[in-house]
Amino acid sequence: MKVAIGSDHAGFDYKEIVKKHLEEKGFEVIDKGTYSKESVDYPIFGEAVAQAVASGEADRGIVICGTGIGISISANKVKGIRAALCTNEYMARMARKHNDANILAFGARVLGIDVALGIVDVFFETEFEGGRHERRVNEIKNIEEKNFCS
Ligand code: RB5
Image 1 (cartoon, protein in one colour):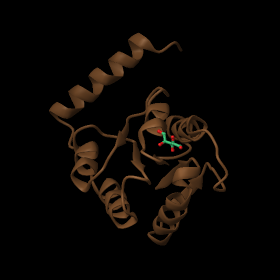
Image 2: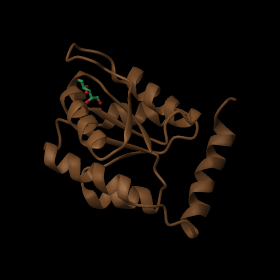
Image 3: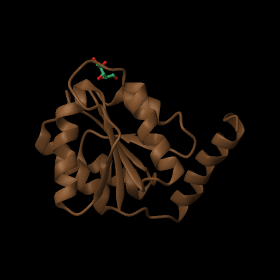
């Protein structure tokens, strides 16, 4: 599986750790930046990861900023993206099972790294349940069709 990853300066250290963690597990990781702790604007990296997932360059994505809020909002502005901001493993599991989330977001200033890595593992181990949840995800897609300019 190909995973696009991106962060701002606040998420940089966690991005490096998560990248290594996923590579050790055999994932192909596409690093969309940022590449240092110099202050940058999170929307750039949220959009870059989201475009990689929406275009098929990557199967899924991970976005990290201080809280996870700004970068997840940014990623969700790209059509086809369901970025889920998770603070625990239950949320990560449900984001996959019920929402078919294709991007995981979290905050490096909110979570310890061990909690964050546990969330990452659950996100990639859990499959979408489909069924009634598929209908609801399709309703999200209908909202996109009505509200996105193509
Ligand atoms: C950067 O200071 C911070 O605002 C950013 O990382 C993020 O938390 C925004 O939502």
